[in-house]
Length: 496
Image (cartoon, rainbow, N blue to C red; front, top):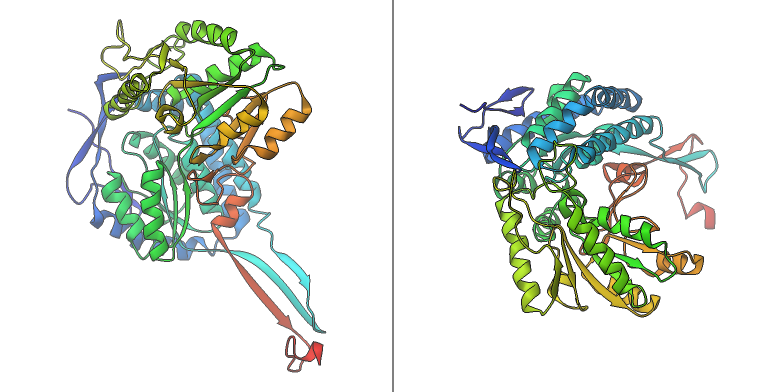
């Protein structure tokens, strides 16, 4: 019988109120049952909010440098357990060990960075317009933060949200994706072992349409940070708007890599293979469009198809594996539907295009790395997020056209250009309508100390990572100190 795991609510590991559980299976081997996790409901969320409110009152009074030390200790524990965490993630969501090790390292880096910000929650001191008066601002926590995270980065993405929220003095209720509950339990166990008070972090497992919705709709949760689909994010934004909540939405992408004729072609090829097929294309920053200059198109496509066909599919825990499985049956079916869309649009499938089969693959959700050629701007496969190992190739004649094609989608997360010309590089940085642009590097690879996020339907203007995320998870408080000993009336006295 499979092990049953718990929520973390009220400072204890507890069963869901419903008594119901969800299976968690290895996407590379569906016969591998990892365990059973709570199928929670609104009652569990309500209990979590009550506990988190108590935790907030205690945690907000803890000096920020001390809060930072807890996060530093958590990062130390992650460093010690990096391999175990990586293997647990690979078993649970499929991507190769090299990537899950990187996932843990990103959380480690984020933890150390957040710890240093405990001494850098800067405000401003400015001159007052009146005599014998000081004017200043400072940062203060907001309250209970609801955190909703996706499956593709089970520890890294939560760390982008949870570490800054905690550093700023907020308590957290976390609803992880139902496909990766084990990683969430391990993350919370580390936070508690590092010294985080029990009421400050709540972990509620369950389905997004139930637990996630209850968290967003609860009046006791003033802050929501979400990463996931644009469709779900838009619904969250509507509810948060009506309730005047602070909300950060990090959603979809349809990212393009541009290859100019003066590019280092081998470097560009390595970049698109990693950007397009790393994490089996299941990244919001994945390279899903490849824009090739007409002078290099044919040769580049030939080399790309050859190299894509050599990628080895399999269980991510095997060191020889290059590409793991999709996360679940629904993800596999979605990619398969887009192959039908591509054929209906007259697109040629240069390689891949079907579910992978064979030794070690039949029990998992494997799909062949796929290259589509003859794709035109405006086609569905060029416009819509597929979230799988599918690369659409578009030809262009000059940089102006490439920029126009890049920008003519509803998303605006990441972009890349490969060129040896500095003018082309800086023109792309300026004109590509994305939150992130890489020069001579793939569309994936954000660093923890820089803001992360996009424009248009990718997000609502807030950023993860870097210094900006600490502004999201805190409020600005302004203070005036008048030591003149008399009534001074701003504006009136100074202009009389």
